[in-house]
Image (cartoon, rainbow, N blue to C red; front, side, top):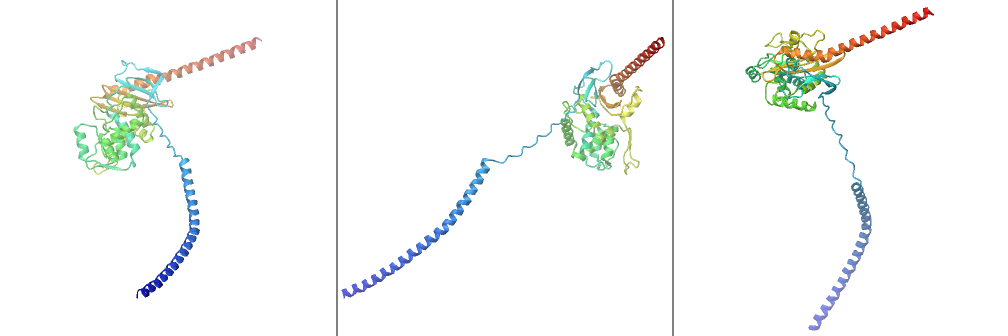
Length: 384
């Protein structure tokens, strides 16, 4: 019994061994095929991979070793200052000759100060402020036909402060153009506030625009708090700075036209069926108090508050050149005009007349000498 069992197991073991050998052979064959196959694919894949890696690293190396140059931003142009400078022939104005405490006379073509006194002293500009209001409004208004509707919130405080006004009423609409003329001709504070609100949303924000423009012009003693010039201890300027503002206005065609206008009528409205006639305060004073027949002032802007005294900004075109005069802190309107005439006459007109007379005398002398020589030649010829 035992031997049979052993024999049976032996035969089964041989079969198992044979089966294992077959599996082993198949496994080895499969492995060889896989290795051979992988070797072929691996070779191709490996080469491609190396190729890609090499190209990528090369590009990275090139970009890292030679970075692209970033464009250098062009420097912003520095603002060109319009602040006048002293001329070589500058004359100090005798304070006993004029009533105004401060004054300046500028050759607008060369931007040189011809004469003055205390012109860089800080003072209250009063309504000369409106020259800057005009300039900033013209430069920032998109449409001169755009309208602004006045309200009691604007009008009532101006009435309480006894501010100069054109006379627009609450509920009335005015164009930008009308408000620009109203600002300069009759010093309308209703117009300056209307322009400020329309352009900047508030007078405070508009004053910031004015201060930015002052910076751009290179002004050194100017700071604006409002658009009208109503007194505020922090609202200051100087004759020097105001001359620069006047020059900027004259270089702007729209501003110069308005400053040079004597009479203007606003558009018709429901509240003013015939419009409002505006007559320039500056021209009114010049015609009323001026005495010099040798020239005509081209235009200007008046100013007055109790703290600032009386001021006048003006320009003169004489013999092809333009001059700017600013007088400040005079006691009366007539004195502001007479002081302005004194500056123009003493330092522009009189020297020009003297030069012309001297030239005429020189010409006459040359002609006389020529005649005498001619006579002498004739006598010599006759004697011969």
